[in-house]
Amino acid sequence: MATKTNPLQFIQQVRAEVTKIVWPTRREVLLTTMMVFVMAALVGTFFFLVDLGIRFGLQGFLGLFG
Image 1 (cartoon, rainbow, N blue to C red):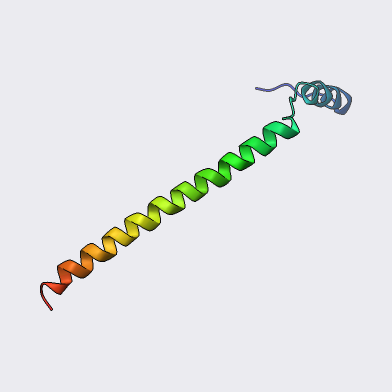
Image 2 (cartoon, helix red, strand yellow):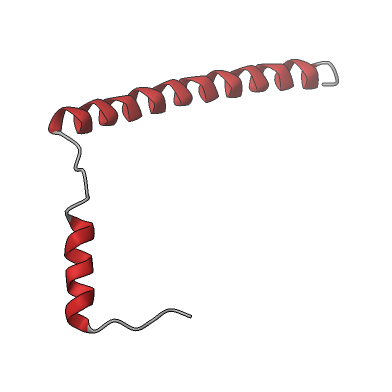
């Protein structure tokens, strides 16, 4: 069972935890943002090509029966 802390102790604990936060630098944010855009473009291209292959495959398969 957790013990109750008074509001003053809670605020002190929160401030102590906030000082432990390590914020990313501007360069790190820009690099990770660019990585997200590059990966999104690669995944989008991959699924476009897979969709294209499936479409042509199905058209060819269905063309055998039509």
